[in-house]
Image (tube, rainbow over all chains, first blue to last red; front, side):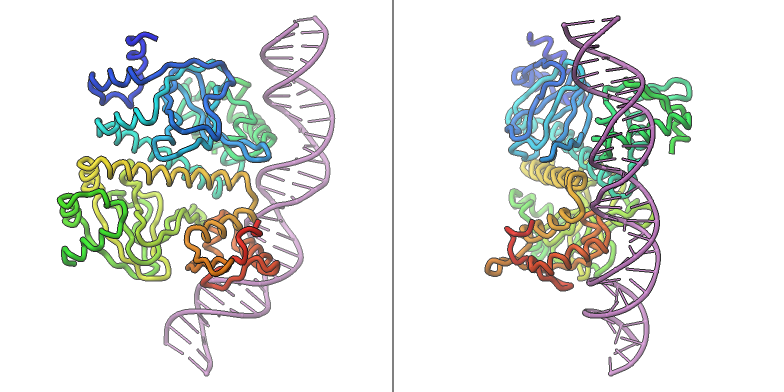
Length: 226
Length: 226
DNA sequence: TCTTAAATGTAAAGTATCTTACAAAAGGAA
DNA sequence: TTCCTTTTGTAAGATACTTTACATTTAAGA
């Protein structure tokens, strides 16, 4: 890939705003652009955590499997997200997998080592990373709380609200969320079973609070969804 | 408190190893030493997250309460630990409380703003903080996994093992853990009920895998505790 | 020492949620 | 279109754990 397009590539990531042109040049020199087919793994548990990634196209899920095959989805990422960043904060070996969802993914990769060098020269960047990891930590702790304090139904509804807040498109009073999640995925995101997700969603549809099909969910009224 | 004793105070924290003597002086000037009685709160949800703390004596628990009064203990801290560090990573307002456990606590406080200035001048320090937050994130995610993948009994046993690993004293083949936790505390740490903790502990005692009283737990054989 | 509150022990009942099981629908491939 | 796989729908057990309830023990204070 040509330098110019790499540069264009990087312009999209707010993380790199603070870089001066020299730093940007260095960055383009150390970055590698990649494309992978849908359903492919970008990394797997056990691999070295020596790279970080920036998603430019497609959807990626981060998660783990238990010994008996259960899955937790830790996050679902969309373009402009950074992932694999545990390598920057001391992880030696991946605990999670990163997997392309139902579309081809485009992303760029760089070595943790290189990135750390960049951080050393640009304190702003270090701070941004710190804030980002902090945000991650807050998210993980909130999820912990919801898992302990709330029942399955509430967690599923919270998921719907979050999805609408983060990625919903307002349509009148309604909120439309397009996604690429199966109900099994939603279960793995909320720590519930697939059947529970099905029945909660159908119950909400019966009460006319939401409408949904395989590709999207429409929340009729965010307020009344409790 | 005199400058010398503040300096001595700070020597104990590995975080500050990398500071040069000038930076150490600056640090002593911005730090404030405090003592609080047992059971008192160091901070509460809703307060500004504008300070960070370093524990030098006593035990502190960090946690949250749900609306209906349930408690999650996020961590139990011992001397030399930093806490309240969410303020460094962008939290505006405390979500958690920090509370002294059954002993008087000694700690020092400094303003997030001051600390951030110090981080700007010492990149090593920034990196250490980043690693620390990373470690926290890893812990939170592991806990999430254990909550979803493992049953109550296993989580309680995992707690015993962790406690032994982190703070146990080897006594022959056995491991002695002195603590200041009630069984309710253990429940709040593992996301279980007090009664479940009681019955699991008693069952383990009956099987002669552990012995315990209010102040300590003796693990007879770490291997066989599964 | 006595009194009281807190912590622990024990048991039974209740219940939210998972499992198991199977059927129906939807989507992709040939 | 037809075939086959994946996803979704529905229902009835099974069950791990919480809740409720109360008794017993321990520690702390007066």
